[in-house]
Image 1 (spheres, rainbow, N blue to C red):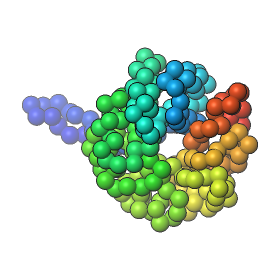
Image 2 (cartoon, rainbow, N blue to C red):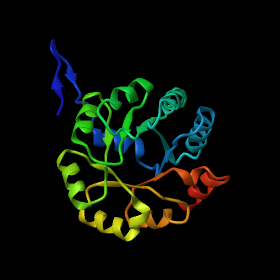
Image 3 (tube, one colour):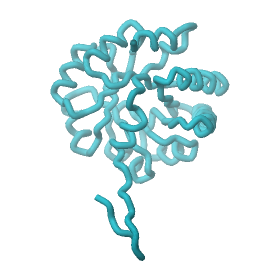
Image 4 (tube, rainbow, N blue to C red):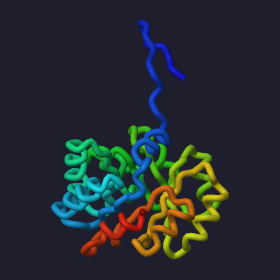
Length: 214
């Protein structure tokens, strides 16, 4: 619903976090998680992912050097019109670090209400992780409509399919152990996006994952 500005005129409401994520991730089934790589390789791989037209890039904040890598990716993303994300945002204090480095989205492997609140207050849509129906329901009630289902590979595509059928209104990202060998299975099970990390690092890894996405 639009609101009237003081002094006249109509101010359009800001898009919700879900709307922002829909816009950024729609038609991009690959979420590349570039963890613990040298800055130059992180940037080069980020550019290769964007060149496919199918990917979004997230840099996990696991070490001080990863913050520099995120900042480098964010600078390149601004030049290319891409949207960078910060993964591994486990605690609220990492949110301002992610924002200062240039991230526009935060992700975590689990659901923490404080991280969600701080991230949204900073203007950063947040994608929490979940592994059970109870965790998913808590995140849903907190307003989350995109979730990272982690760890995906050990639990399998059938498990994700059951979650997808139970929560049809959610957009699920299969994360953890996703490779070119199981990517198609997770997509068929209902994953809207795949969080891929190590599978991208081997020679030809990115091409293999892209080919598996069809």
